[in-house]
Length: 510
Ligand code: HXC
Image: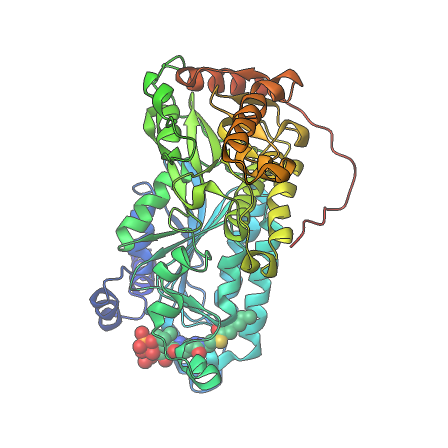
């Protein structure tokens, strides 16, 4: 019997060595951890149960019949993060460059199927040279099997992709269809075609990092959500992030008890809005001041900065925040910010996460680029997302809510449950100056008259009371009471149930 036990031990040790010491050293020399080291950082101590450690490829071409490495370039299994289960796959670059064979794909599909059936999220750690070249079309089929499961799992379980090495060609589409993508600076990249192909086709010279590195995708393309300095930072942030999410669309988010009282009044908020309506202020201050323990996990902080999205907790429960940021482009909605916020709102709606929206928006961004770029279609994504969302929705207008942007930003008319305004709110078709220049065009030469008319318009509309008169605003609140009002409303709205009309699925303007 001992010999049999020793044999198991020997096989496991061999599998854990992956592509061997030399390749592990090469991985470390690039500042990267190995597939198993990454899992160890990601999960609770001793919680990982590895599956399919002895799976090998079946390829007999190009000399592959003699090259078999147990596990075939991907580690899969079930672990725990803060004592909650998670399925993980972690590609092992030391084995055939982490390339995806038929066997490798079947391993990933196995945990995706389990995750979907059991309602347990998936974290995929990507570090791969792409399709296993020796296997040809079989490997392409493997990718498509993964893609199909990404789609089936979308909206059922949260899917998170960590890009910790190469991710190129069609391989990028699996992470792209997951809910969140975190990347590591300088050691990961994502692109459909690499710098060499770009050079041949378009004669542009570009480095891997500039074309598809973490900074590019978190600042320019918006493909990725967050960029981190190294593997450890990425994995630890993922642990923190995971704690905000429910296991599936059938579960509530985990409750994190807090000592932060719900009736904590913050008088500094009474002075957040500057006297001058054209002066910016930092909307992040408001979010950080109202959430439990000032703990806010911002997503895409470096992309479309005119809107803020992210998760915080109110009285222990996860809440998704969407907020215009007056510091950037005066908080205008444009193509990028609309797309960024729309996808976030839809994520929250899939997973029963209430949405709190802070509004200070002078309108949609004017411009030829915006119109040619399809602001109509992209702006309507956000409108559609807010309108379809049936989770609890609370809106607070802090200052401007002008024009179509007022409607879009989770207004009462698109089924927000509770709408608050601060006394500084200005809710109107447009700003007083623009309005007067249109309706009193004949007086434009007369500065005094225009000033008088502008003040008259401001008095009439640049306040929350007309909207409150119509019941579009449920209450005008003191800024210092904001946390209390939000916490109480969220507690009440836990009882919310919405009947939706039957449909196969909707047709959001893509
Ligand atoms: C088989 C691969 C491989 C692949 C790398 N390797 N990619 N084996 N299939 N796709 C192997 C290498 O032969 C090498 O083996 C080991 O992995 C490490 O690779 P290196 O080249 O030494 O590493 P590095 O210098 O870091 O370069 C990494 C790399 C490069 C940039 C990823 O390996 C590369 O360009 N690979 C090919 C990428 C590619 O064209 N893939 C197909 C894309 S198309 P040894 O034994 O020497 O250690 C695709 C389509 C998906 O993926 C479509 C889905 C719909």
